[in-house]
Length: 97
Length: 386
Picture 1 (cartoon, each protein chain N blue to C red):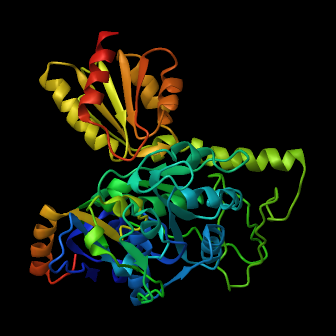
Picture 2: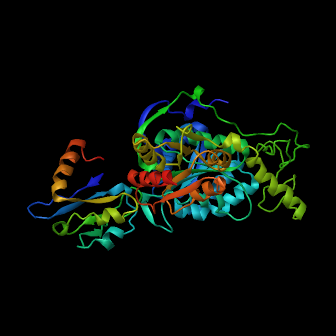
Picture 3: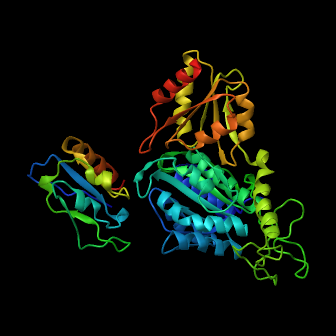
């Protein structure tokens, strides 16, 4: 499952997508996000880890630093222009990737 | 012996190298794996853990790589074909038990999907910087075999080969993948089980009274006992005699350690696999392995289209190093160009084997990506001038 929070009316330069089942909750993405978009959630994935969730979607610049740091391919950032394509692709594949 | 059809997923698949490696292990008869999953090798054991119960085997996730690498050897002595999967940081932790496997002649496979290092380095990006560690990482004198696939198809084919070599020579075999090969998705054709040749364990036919666990019959590879059939054997990392019991004298040490080396070295010609292309008229030979060989292919084609006489030697077996082949080529070519995703490892072997008869040019890359073919081409042009 990939969680990509909707931005609603807020204008952000990018957004992050979280591959919940790949996460081992190391917290690197939370720690290193330059605009503090993320926090570890209280939810569990099937392995019992707490994946991150987006707490400040409007602050995301789509820099993909989270994706660079993630040791498990569990998160990635996309620039706003790419985000539209990403959303269309996810809609087409039913959210699975 | 033919493969057990239960483990063979015959058909044409579109899968990545990690998954192909897992299918290769299943086809080769692996029914046990112990691991501590680590990026970029995780998918191998993820698939294995899901698949192996359906064919009558098991996977255990251990508390760390030390535990994984010794649990797998317990599995082997219990009768299973077994392997473990890791990447650089875990490979470092497994070194002690690779030496143990070499000393106790435990047939097993260590898969290392290489990523950038040292230390945790680049978890999600490629390197080929564990090549020397694979050969020399554990202490003492020993020989291992290392294979380097360059495609998902080879991840399947050569994993079977790795298990076969492990059984034939009773040696730990290092399967040196890299992140790109592991995560690259391509067509993988898995043949029918009756088309796959697997080497069964070399079980003794001797009676319980006459069996010597480390006695040899001329081919330097001792026979194993089948656990549970009444044979008594003792497995130790201490220097041991033919009975398997510690016997710490210079004479026993000399006999044992030389045999461990010679059983591999004397079969070098049979173990060393390589792919060659356009070497007949070559002035410059590009020596590469793993993912780098595919980038090198492009550079070689570019060189040829410019009229340069470039040939290809791709190492499929990295260890034992095919030094006879390099020595033979060194006598008739001008230079070797060795691109690799490290700051110069296998290039030292090429240089050593060339023994000054041909120049050697390294095209190093610290890892995190692959070479630009232009860099290799520039080295080819430079090498051609010498």
